[in-house]
Length: 500
Image 1 (cartoon, rainbow, N blue to C red):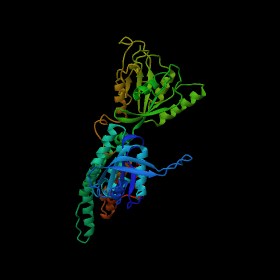
Image 2 (cartoon, rainbow, N blue to C red; image 1 turned 60 degrees about the vertical axis):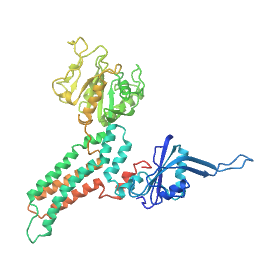
Image 3 (tube, rainbow, N blue to C red; image 1 turned 120 degrees about the vertical axis):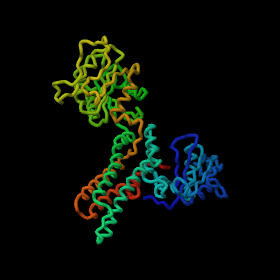
Image 4 (cartoon, one colour; image 1 turned 90 degrees about the horizontal axis):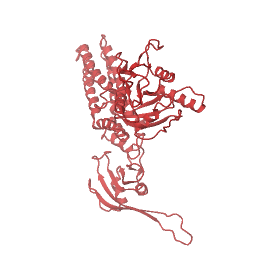
């Protein structure tokens, strides 16, 4: 693990040029080093923004022949603020230096701080010190990283809730109930000669049922929480020229994919991340799926089929303005068992088939997977729109009519994507559980509690269920970081940016 007795320094703002840049210094010598940076004799006033001048002299590059070399001076006007321990982000003495956001100036300030005795901080080391000094628990520390990495408002809201301690409070309530049961069972063990039980087995089982219910309530949010935190892969597939790349561009609101009237324009996978319906989704534009003799296009089709197997959601795009072909039906058959939305494109053009013909086929080898069939008439005069089939299959595989050209139906498609990936509550409620580590530990605690409940059903000593209850308690403590290992801390904080 990192040393926590020295003073560290790093640039806390993103790399590149900007109006302002911030350098953070934390440790026992932070105030002294800051005064050296600005050549100040008097101590800094706590929590007072001090305007000062920073200058750094460095050896110049070799001079021209006959010209004397002179040191190069880098300077800036800066604002220096001291946050004394323990009332700071890390719990140590912290100084923040605000300067103009020139990489040259910021690097010069860091270099001078190192010369004055600081060490360049490792990734996440400031937040690690905040955790070690009790300013944050491990859940909140992880939430700091999630908040920095958030790319959608929903991700930011979920991370900030955890930073505010909502999950910590929920875990604390569960631990409190568990501790009460453990204390009464241990008291029974402490007085074996009296034959007195501080808690009856039936009462202990009922109490543990309440603890398990609390864990179940958190685990019920885990899938939705991970979707918000990590996003999902959405593959756009279909036959050539049905409008896949146009839909890709429309969802991104950018001309990212090349669109032409030539079949097979897209030969490779094209991936972009977008905020769609409040979710961070990786959209994947794929090559048109069809039989072809072109070697390059064959590879593109193969990659498209590989994408089908790993995607969290598939958008199957059909062209309503032309007759359906075998490639369309084969793709519908191939994706029937996967999460998908059927996108009926080009609804602004005359219809070549009626989407109300989408119904389970009687001869399907999958036992009722839906296929599309052309119709010879439409009560709406050739522009039928979409009607639920009445067999319930539209619930798991929504059908959305759109026109990429006019934009019609795109909002309905976005809503269908959000509903299919999660639930209608995704965009309204902020789940407490978003992290896989938390989910795994809660499942471990739940399994131990179930085992303890089973042990309490028999006429055995309290010592046996207590072992399982202690295992459950250890799992809960690992979530908040009250019981953890150096390897785990290093794994978590190494993914942070330097300066945080």
